[in-house]
Figure 1 (tube, one colour):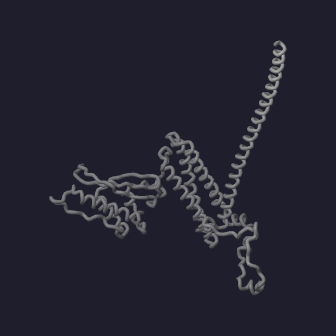
Figure 2: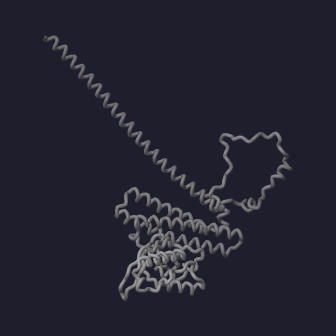
Figure 3: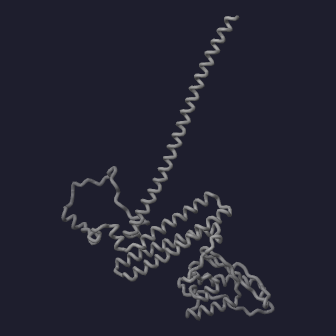
Length: 365
């Protein structure tokens, strides 16, 4: 998929003499994790344009710069002409990448022209060797995996929505898609974890290493929770979440306010609502909970409970450490008091001896 391509630049060109004099343009391709460079002649751009028009039955959204008939007054070394052509070719590639219709950028001819490494599933190949990661590409890969996990959540929500509509086949297909994406993420997390050791040896600080280790651990935790969700049937998840009375509560419809007023009557003596100390406010929808169904809400609740338990465990460890420090300080203070008492007793004893010696000296004198 070329959607992984972030940007394309044509920043320079150069003249080559083999097999005969011609101009080639340097194309810089930037993806999520990878980036590469390649050189293309104007004639190759022209062939690409012809092939795209032929294979897709429609011309790309932008035309390539027109050909020029070179003469004695305007040669191939005309800097102004070459700069105009460079800018036009860059605009041509960017127009294809940014087009709303992906038919041109999804074509095999365009992928081969940009030298996109395509795997068996049609996706950009990611670095399989952990040593290939740099500090920046490691973070790019982490961001990409987070985006993949969000896609898994989207597939799970889609699965549940289709299940509610009774489309079992489509629901099963969405569940399989979520499992497939999750398996790919798990494999890439392993490479991300293995890459930390080479990065640490290359000079990464101990604090940064610990931070990235925690980031990998959080990814693994998210994958573990998603794995449990995608392997549980929709009906079982509902039963575990809402209990036996779920179906009855689901079909319950709240009475209109007009019917309630007609039945109960208007309360003319009602006092204006006031805030009661200690009373809980009604639950409100948030951006986090709005896209989730019951299963997602249950998983989010369990995740937050787990995080709170972890935080309480950390707080317990800190308090235990503070207690140990307090006991150590108390023992040290007690020891210092004993030493001061011993010193005071020794001073009193020496003072007594000095007084006795002074009396003896007075008698001798």
